[in-house]
Amino acid sequence: MENYFEKILQNDSIPRQIRETVYSEMRHALEVSNIAVLISKELGKDEKFCDDIAVAGVLHDIGKLRVNRYVYSDDSDDTLVVEQMKYVRMHSAYSRDILTDEDYPVNIIEAVYHHHENYDGSGYPDGLKGNNIPEMSRILRTCDVFSALITDRSYRKAFDKKTAMAIMIDEVEDYDMEVFLAFQRVFHADDFPEIEKLQQDATELQMKHFNLFEKEAVSF
Ligand SMILES: [Fe+2]
Ligand SMILES: [Fe+2]
Image (cartoon, rainbow, N blue to C red):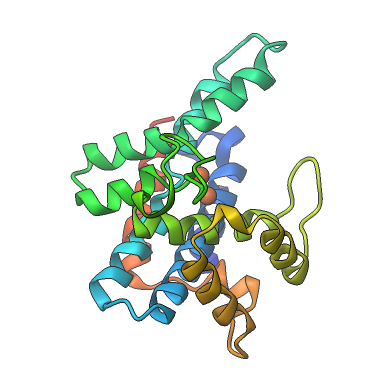
């Protein structure tokens, strides 16, 4: 799938300043989607659940492209950091809005909208706690944090996989324990894929839903 993502970097219909962002968001999305499917299978979920979470994983951060639009079109610079934080936290609501406009099933929309809720109630947008958080969101949360930790950020280098896991164990109250233990089993299995594979191997179903990234990016 590398070629498909690489093509994004050359796609002239996507504004140059966001091409890199779209490219890395797509890789993150696929990684989250792939790990979410592995955890779901480990939890014994049926095919429908696994397909739905694969789609939710691909699209969970689609609203970030809309956040970028507002941040880039904002001329003031002093307030930018604070504003950016505020906007970034809105991305799950934008994701929900985009998926609602596209007539996605309610369970996928809900899963996406709540993917930043923490099990102890400290997350957003609604501060939901425990099993009030949709199960798919609880799975996505776990995958999302892991994916973020093993990725370079502007303010730090990527952590290696083992360190990322150790950091997550330290803040384990954020996660659903049943999900987290399933993630640990998947992670420690001999066939846990290399990061590169998690960010590149896409099924037809996942690819189909990546179209929405291009649609959002082009309408930037
Ligand atoms: Fe997110
Ligand atoms: Fe994410």
